[in-house]
Length: 527
Image (cartoon, rainbow, N blue to C red; front, side, top):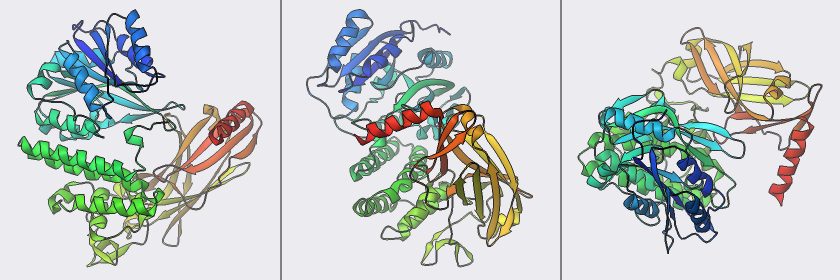
């Protein structure tokens, strides 16, 4: 759909040493149609020919203007600010050199901005893992339907979307309220820009359309900031950007947004890093723990209580324990969905994290509905000609027993897909929990080609409906792919593994061709 706003948008593309991808980014902006008056590409003093690529494109496309910086800024904020100052159109958007705008993105956002007369319009961003092309929606709850929010206070959840690239802005609004990015090297500059924007109190229109494709290249030579979390400096930078955002909200008199930002830090940022702690070395863990405790020390009980149960429980453990402990158990609690592993300790008549940490109370657990319980389901998978899967469900302070679970529903869903293989088996009491055993042939897993399958579990209860969670591996998983003969495909290679969130998944490689590709990839990675 073409909107009535021809030539009203400037798309600002920034890049540094990205000659391989920046042309695709620029072309995706130019392909948006007549609504885009110009594309302003800012080359941040690249050394790999990025500037030459842009100059050649500009020679063929009059709507493309190129700005060559003489000195690299060290971050994303300075080139974006420079592009913003150079933009001539009433509305602006930002695009990174290794990402793309999907067809119709500008029209969708501009249409919403013009229809509602608002200075900000936002849409859905898709995180696309490459080369697999696996898509994950970013903050999908904000973009399920078109909506108009008269101010950020009317929808504080807008603070959870700290991206600057999936939005369209009225340039006059940014100028009037001095909304700009931090200059120089400033990781998580989006956090500060978003805080300055929302602190100005704009009305925001949201659309359900996909307006940005964020390419995730985990094996890139220079990982993106969001993926470069194995250095403690990354955590320090994230905390600094978060705290600066809170300061901005408070200085603007928007205390409700300041509270929402602090709660978001617990619900989102803290959980991301806690999930990864078991994979870090001892030096990182101690440094991270000290920094996290220093940040959380400023939280009041009301702020902790405002956060969701798993997040506030994690915060209480951090505040109560002076040194890193229970990291695997904390990582499982930080997963989505959360899983609370035993032991299940009690102090003063209520559930606590551990007997020696009575201050780390698990408040709200006893009153949570069955479908919200952070139940742990352990899975033991044996792969032969058929797959044998044993599920062990842990009870949780007797709360799951009260719901009377009777059936386990196993759902194998292809990652990034919708169709699934669903199996059911009865639950049998065993020890302090329940066990279910399922057997199935791996043939149906090959029907979608080479894919990754997520293992999900639904526990059907007599009282409380269905509790849905993810199974976690109960024991060590094989480090090699397991060949399984197939009449239809010749051979399948199956490899069970634990995801970053600790859940069980199965990677399936189909056919002789797929096997050869997998072997070739493994050889390239080793070289």
